[in-house]
Amino acid sequence: KFLVDKNAHRPKALIVFEEQDFYGQVLYYFTHKYKNKPNLLAYIYWVRNIEISRNNIKLFQYFDEKSIIDIAAIDCCVGFLKIEKTNILL
Image 1 (cartoon, rainbow, N blue to C red):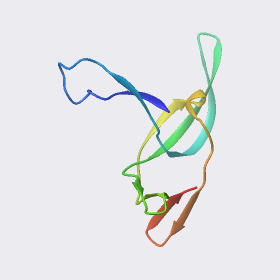
Image 2 (image 1 turned 60 degrees about the horizontal axis):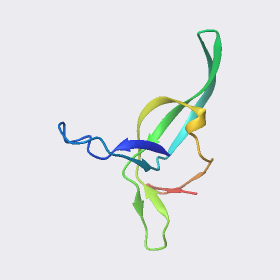
Image 3 (image 1 turned 120 degrees about the horizontal axis):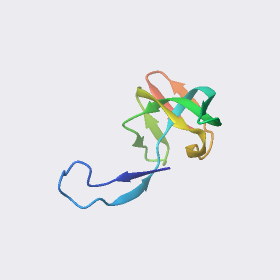
Image 4 (image 1 turned 180 degrees about the horizontal axis):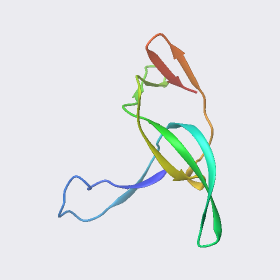
């Protein structure tokens, strides 16, 4: 979960943070030393445009951008199941 400003699309609006779930595939885990302190990071391939099926299953068509995050932000590990052109979050 990440805190996201729900008014980010409105430049002069009050900043209001809310928790949102994000999904992605960890491509790499690595460490980076900053100011003589090691940091554990992950290189993530993000999932976008998640749809919820009638059976409450989360589906997506494709991965989107990649970025680096602190592994403390990873809430849990899930799997992916690909059936034809549809990907299912487990």
